Image (cartoon, rainbow, N blue to C red; front, side, top):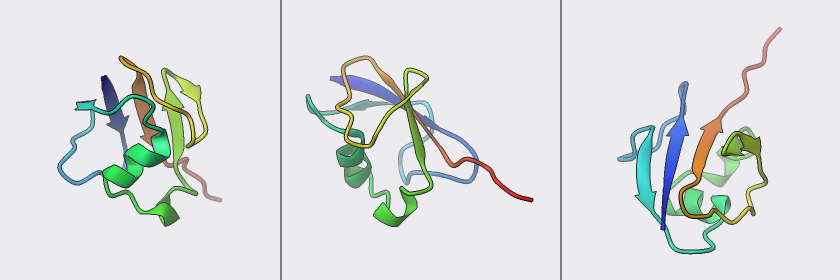
Length: 77
């Protein structure tokens, strides 16, 4: 099955440009996908995953045709 992955800002995934279409196995969770893409677990506490514009947990199983958007919320003072 296929999904689209997007991200912005200083976050990047080696060899996977933003707005890429990826082939994944059925029932792949966001966490499993990030493992497969080499995203470090310590970075995930700052990441917010949105699937089809709705916030989801990392254990959410992705479905065919969905769009995953990853971002780091900006904070400051």
